[in-house]
Image (cartoon, rainbow, N blue to C red):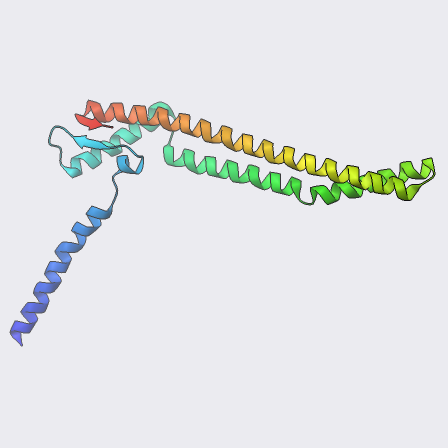
Length: 175
């Protein structure tokens, strides 16, 4: 019975030792999460490298005004908002245009003597105009999204240059 308890205790000790190693191996460094490869050229330990990365991250945020994780989140929120606005503006664009066109066409047709024919022409014209507005709104939303993505990419490049320069000053090779 004592041997069994020692065996079970030994297994628990081995598992306790192994779990932190696995957790460390699976966690990504700050630089790696930004897509930057960092190699300690002066023999820095992993703990020292993590501390250096954190201080360089803070320094780069302070000096560039860009927090990359916040910038990406804001870009996603802006593009989602633009897409939602375009979707709301486009809801029933063709049918709404047709209804407005039919009403206008009926009015003009009544004056000309054939309200039914005027309404039909107006509905077709309104439907086409509504679809054109829809495509225009979608193109504007797409252009806005592209502009936001480009601006965010420029901000990220600026941040990465500052972050890398800081790490290089601390004797790391950065790629």
